[in-house]
Length: 89
Image 1 (cartoon, one colour):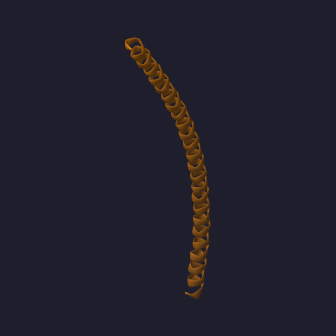
Image 2: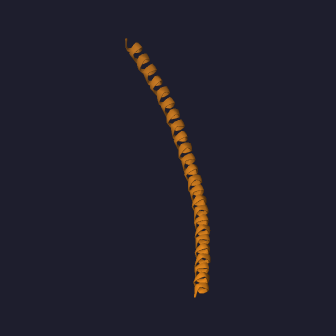
Image 3: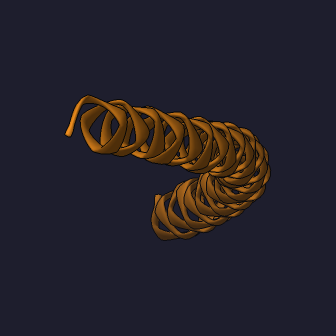
């Protein structure tokens, strides 16, 4: 009876060690996957920030061009109005 109990305890101990190793392996794999996901998310964020900065720069350039065009049109209209006023006097 004691021998059977010792054998059972030994088998249970070995089973727990095997499960513990398996748990460690799974935890290590999960940690590796979490690290890879974090690195991927960081890279995606950096790419998105760069794209947003490029889009903002392009929009700013376009707005500056549109403003310059509007100023030019306003100057031409002012000159034309001044010319018209001069001709009527």
